[in-house]
Image 1 (cartoon, rainbow, N blue to C red):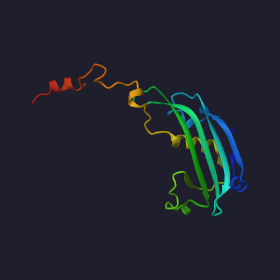
Image 2: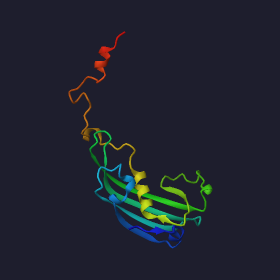
Image 3: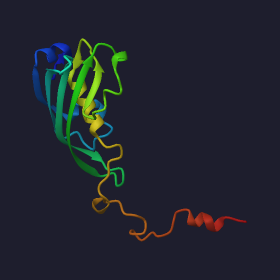
Image 4: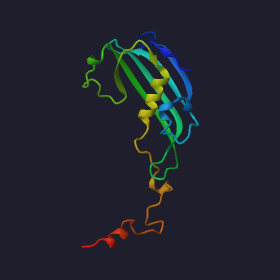
Length: 162
């Protein structure tokens, strides 16, 4: 089980942590995943920025399956995420102008950071909002291709009186 760490100390000591998590252990993904088969690998490395701020470098990767929003069938996805998290003393110290790199986030320093929660957040953020197969690979067929060329509302249009 991934530990709970003191992120400032972890960064200062340049600690390193890696492991593998079963998708079944990531409850926030339960509604998104097609099935809970598979694992994600993670690696967390502590370091200090050029400005002397404690920071964490997180890499997460793995294969999972979500439900295609077009045909509702299994859609395999491979994720590879790298993120740098710079720890700051207080939330009001976050300067949005300084946080322009998409792979770097500024977060408030906390006394304890749950690594499982951190990995799960990165997986959730890496997923597409509406995952779909490419049109040519999707099992969903447009109405014209299935032989039903008329709209379900065309019968209602015939009943419409002027």
